Length: 161
Image (cartoon, rainbow, N blue to C red; front, side):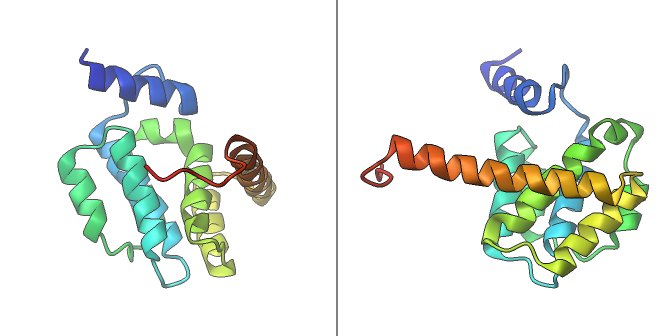
């Protein structure tokens, strides 16, 4: 295993508890679904796209997939995209909701239309609205904790490198 793959594996294990890297098909469908949710309000903000592209790159997506995500229109029906996801995608379906909420929120807003798309996707995956609400609460708590951590670590403001 190369150092690069070892790093990807560490990230997948740390965030998702995966013991192996997902297939390229599963990863592609996952990331496209996240972008579709972020476009749920009809506007895929640059921050939302950048969040998903960054996630893809950080977690070892192929160069071709990253390039595809940079121009992906994200206007397909979420149920169609979820419907063709490989079986291993079921193992990470709650994380798909989590990452979709994070992407939708990357522009500082999580609109009702984005929430409706996330909820529609979650329902298609067999995830209740109650679980979606609990995942939303975790995303909010994590954002607040991150702000608190950065304030403590950089009392003078974030350094520019």
